[in-house]
Structure formats: C-alpha cells, structure tokens
Image 1 (spheres, one colour):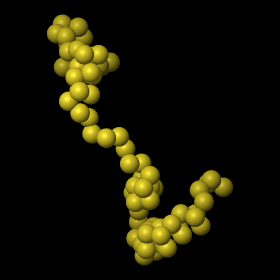
Image 2 (image 1 turned 60 degrees about the vertical axis):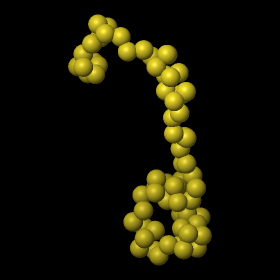
Image 3 (image 1 turned 90 degrees about the vertical axis):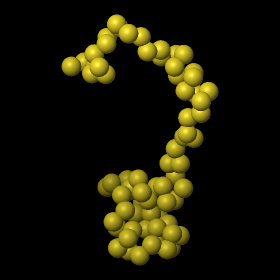
Image 4 (image 1 turned 120 degrees about the vertical axis):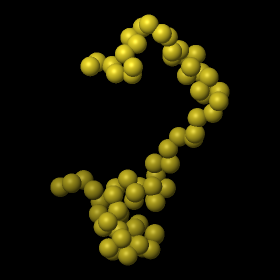
Length: 72
C-alpha cells in the first residue's frame, strides 16, 4: 500500500480543479500540490533579511577560499 489516498486526490484534481484525466495523470505530485494550494513556499527575501544573513555569515577572504567548492 502506498499510503496515498488516490480517490481523494483524483476527486480534488478532476472535480475540484476540473482537470481532464489525462492532464491529472501527467502532473507531478509537486505540481498537483501547488495547484491545490499547498507548498506556497516562503515569501521572497527582503533587504533586511539579506542584511541579517550577511551579518550572520560574512564573506571572509582567506578562510577556506576554495572558490565555492567545499569538501572537494
């Protein structure tokens, strides 16, 4: 058993979203979740958020200056 409630997903896709069966079955799980209003994601980063990240993780020259390749 996959743990996926297919009847509920099919009803949501074909009745709720009015998708044709062919369109429903071509969707990826992520696409279906997005269409159903799930996985909206985080808001875009603001300048204040970027400034906070820069303060917490400053770029320093000399420490592990490997051109962005870590663990090679």
